[in-house]
Image 1 (tube, rainbow, N blue to C red):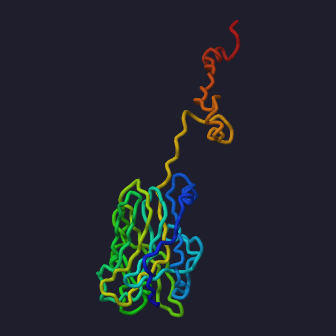
Image 2: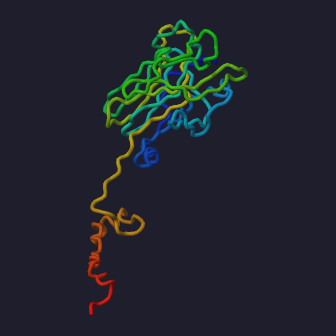
Image 3: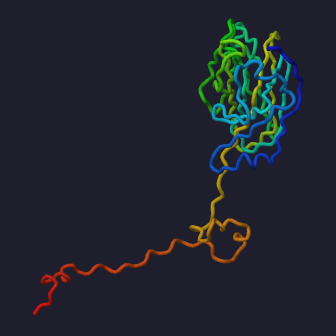
Length: 275
């Protein structure tokens, strides 16, 4: 796979309006996939025999794979993405490396930097054999495993989400998902930057195939009073909210029931009057 150098650029701009659709289902965490934009120029199908397409679900998260391309970052290459994401819980990247020779095991070769609206940042280090490995794990002499595979709420970890074979061959090729948990709640994410800062240079590239932001589950707005007595959930319309008529009421009291007749008197003398 040929290396390609990308300088610091901004792409994948996502407007806040897109978050409304991403959070339309109450009570469930949502994904906001980011398109990789014009920096993604290397076709996945030139490396992998089969590839995910469209809005693909990988590792339980949704990624925009419609372009069919990945970004390849050579040493000192960087790619940046901007947007506005309220209350993110994690950032997920489809991330592998290429030309990951075994002597690089244990070497920090890159970073993922999250930037928030208050000016603070959070940095995740990419370490060969820790949370980053070769995409073509069937190749000889490469780092084909990772040790950081345990899900965590505080540290980055890697999981394999796509398995196929290398194009034109029989060796195994994978897509891994790097999860970077957002360690501070109630933030607004405004940027994600991926950088290859391999200290040894060489042919190693960091390959980004997909990016998505996981958002916290929206909290439903509590309704006043008891059950709505209007049909079709019409109590929640603007007109109903401003209406002075009664729309909420406590459940009606159960109707009183007559006590059963005394069975002894009813059946005295076998139901016949005394003579």
